[in-house]
Length: 370
Image (cartoon, rainbow, N blue to C red; front, top):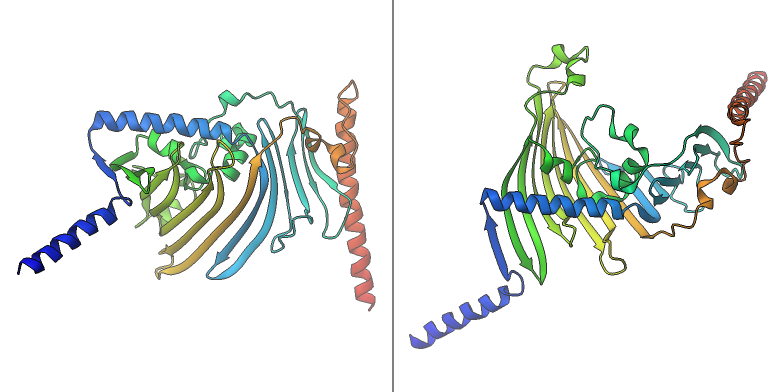
């Protein structure tokens, strides 16, 4: 009898010691005053992280599967040097790093967009806009959901950098990010747990974000009145685990109900926390189950998004990449002939389009003769 009790006691003690390295400390926080302090600290950390992303470059492999079928798979190489921005991409369904066919650049004095056909070596200008990049890093803010004007119009570079590198703060895409969510009057924090797990400090946070009404833009839609029966306003609940000094998402589960559909989503993110002071994402994975009730019968879809990052801190002196001459094109004239320079590029674009139409007509005529 004594031996049996001793064995049970020994087993209990061993079990306790085995659990100690996994969870050393856990504290549930419910006090409103302390919650406010924690939330403010989180928001300050996220703002520092946002600005640190303004000096990052590298490549990202995007792959999206819809119902287990690959929808797109391509590589994007990007440089964020706020207020400058560059991205060049391989064709969809091709992920060849040296086969980029599109370029979008915001430079010091102008912005431009270039394209080229597969296996072509010559870039064609699609858009050129003369505008100085005079924004300051300290004024760069988080995207705001349904802002008017939209966040990408207010600060295209800041929006692009966050949309590309800031996956550790995403909630529902870019708009409803962690910073916006916890700053919103529509968000209720249900619980925050401070945890040290395997020597790593973590926060486990659960919340509900519920908008009381539909956005004005939706209500003005012609079919809103016809199809509004049974529609739900935007409600998002989530459970997330935050890690690193900047409290970035490592794991999350979300449930969204909006209009006629529901979506359940699970997220996993791995970071490089050793190379640079700023933790940079290495792998971002999102699995979604989407149910649409609009047709009377439930339409189900699944989606998998995988992003693989190869990022590093960028060199702020490397400005050549943000110019047209880097791609073999003539630099714009910013003197008295600036207007004429813009017109020249417009005529160049129109000329390319006319040549395309002419070649297409010749091919069609030949096909008819055959």
